[in-house]
Amino acid sequence: TLVNLDGALVAPADAKVSVLDRGFLYGDSVYEVVRTYGGRPFELDAHLARLARSAERTGLAPRWDGPRTAREIARTLEAAQSLGAPPAPADAAPWNAGEWYVRVVMTRGAGEIGLDPALAVDPRAVVIVAPLAAPPARAYAEGVTVAIASVRRASPAAVDPAAKTGAHLSHVLAVREARAAGAHEALLLDDAGMVTEGSSSNVFAVVGGRLRTPPLAAGILEGVTRGVVLRLAREAGVPVEEAPLGVDALESAAEAFLTSTMREILPVVRVGARPIGTGRPGAVTERLHRAFRRLAGGPPGL
Ligand code: PMP
Image 1 (tube, rainbow, N blue to C red):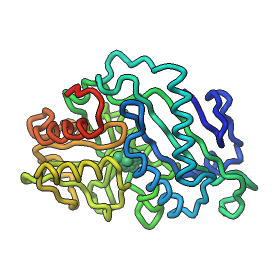
Image 2: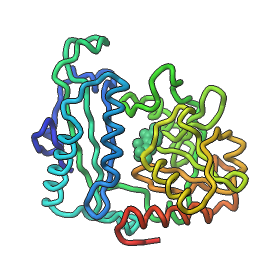
Image 3: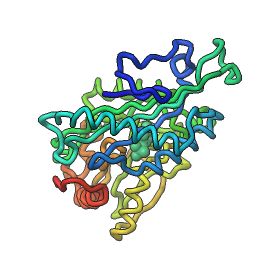
Image 4: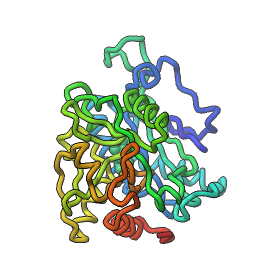
């Protein structure tokens, strides 16, 4: 693991920011997670565009602009790669071996303690490059369980859900619940009980022969992977709809999957103890994942 802190490449143990930093005190930061295929960042432009939107939506002036951020990511990746390819875990999916995880964090900075963002000075910019830790091959072959969290997705009026901010406590608590229930991911509902998204993923289900995913208006993050999957589905002639998804519809769906940068397209085969469809990854899911893997490049593995 290698860290770029405000432009200085340092080991994680030496990457230190002040306890007065508002990212630490308030989660007052925006961030992105990108991964590599063949050693190169995938959909970097989309991630940088979303980072800029997250900063705009929260009125945070990042230390680096988009082009500088892209250069610093490239520099950090090169330095990490020159230290040698990471050893892949034995259970890794074959296409993930030797790939990298890239986290970009922009905080509003430190300053006198107080919620007023005008107190912030000296915003921090951080890039963390680490060996990719993606779901194991087994998760793709067998599918995973999701749990419906009791924690609700913050309502759009509270914090803009389209901004990818460091204020993640509700998602942390949702994952805590899911893990206690033995589930891979927590799904968060809105105040009306409709499915919004996972703690760090978007949700798709095959309902009535159509691929359905909650609309952006449901109060979700506009996942980069979600966008790629919608495009691939349209290209493949799979009927798609961005429409509200109830828990009932999800539970009675023919198939379902999660999307995220780290998961790609990960089959969901149970909501709690209830199987979805046949209880095995579905045909539409597998077809889209193959198309995704072709687009992303790297060894096929599927
Ligand atoms: N929703 C939330 C809340 C997330 O944190 C993530 C992970 N970034 C996603 C969805 C999936 O987004 P992406 O496909 O861009 O990784």
